[in-house]
Image 1 (cartoon, rainbow, N blue to C red):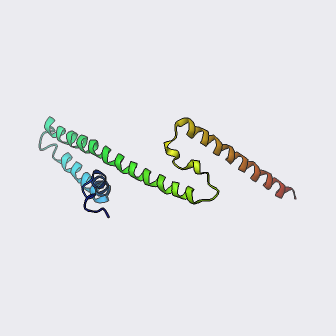
Image 2: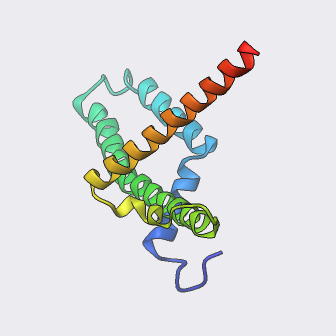
Image 3: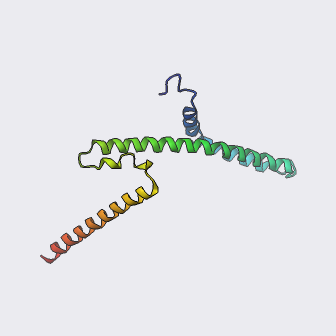
Length: 137
């Protein structure tokens, strides 16, 4: 749990808000809001102001949610990378240069990806060769 100084940080507010707004209750409330808005259409004669209410509301909510979702995804990705870095660091045969890979350039990432593709192809050939030997015995 966050201590008193972190309680009102943007990350903490974003995390809590995303948690609440990502719930089934929030979704149901949004659905009810849209239904109520649609039902009131005939009452207001489908006026421009009636349409403007839902357009403005959804635009504001969407705009704000972009920042909340991005903050939450950035935080989750950072935590995931740190966990993976710790696993790599703790494994004896792991290549330590893979730690902090997310900060490499696109060219460096492509190079590492080619290395893993080559490794995968070698493993597949090895398995195919072993399978062939087992079938021919």
